Image (cartoon, rainbow, N blue to C red; front, top):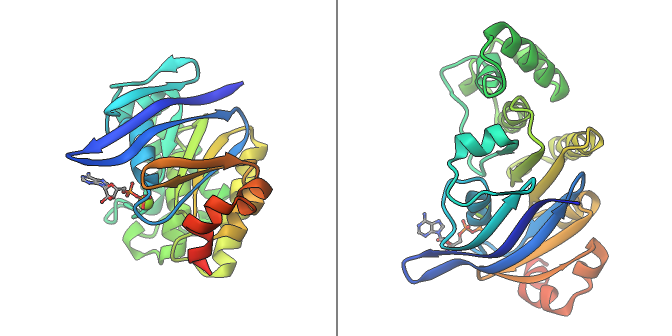
Length: 238
Ligand SMILES: Nc1ncnc2c1ncn2[C@@H]1O[C@H](COP(=O)(O)OP(=O)(O)O)[C@@H](O)[C@H]1O
Ligand SMILES: [Mg+2]
C-alpha cells in the first residue's frame, strides 16, 4: 500500500518549472531515496509534499487523503514531518525545549511532551546535551537534534533533506544507523542525499529528478546502472 502518492505534480516559480509533472508512489514502511543535481527540484518537491507550497498542478495523496492546499501544521498533525536542508533550531532555547516544541504537536500536556522529548533525545543519543542551548551544538549534533524534533511529532512519513550534508564519515554513519532504526519502527521515509553510497544502502527505491522532471525510478541497482542517470547525475559526481 502506498502511504504517499504524487500525481502529475508541478511547481512553477514564474517561468521556471522547479517540478514538472512528477508522479510516483511511496509504499508504506519503505525508504524512498530522492536524488539529482543541485537545482533539480528536490527541496521544492518536499515543500510541495509537506504543504509549504501548494503545487501549481497535480495532486498529492497522503494516507488516502488529498493534501492539496493543506498548511504545514495540519499536514504535520496528519503524520508528515520534514527536516530542513539548512537546519533551523531555536538557538536560544535548550536542546530539550526544541524537541518539546515538536512533541506538543501530539499532546497539550507539557509533562507528556517532555517525556516524549526525552525519549527522542535518547534515540538520537543527545540526552547528555538536553540542557545546552541548541545554538551551542556543532553541526553534527544540530542535525541529530533536527531528527529528534521531527520524530517527536510522531510521524508516519518522515522527509529528510540532506540530513548528512556537512557531516564527517563517523557522524554520517550514525545518521545512517538512525534512519535504519526508524525504518524498523515502521515509519516510512523519503531521503534526499548526495552521498550515493549512503543512498544505495538506505533506499528500497530511488527517484531521480533532473531539471524538475522525474528522470528515472527504480531499485538502487537499476538506478546506478541507468545510462541516463549516469549522464545527468552520477557521471558528474566522479
Ligand atoms: N521560492 C522560490 N522562488 C523561486 N525559485 C525557487 C524557489 N525555490 C526554489 N527555486 C528554484 O527552483 C529550482 C529547484 O530548487 P530546489 O528545489 O532547491 O533544488 P534542489 O533541492 O534539488 O537543489 C532552482 O532553480 C531554484 O532556484
Ligand atoms: Mg535542496
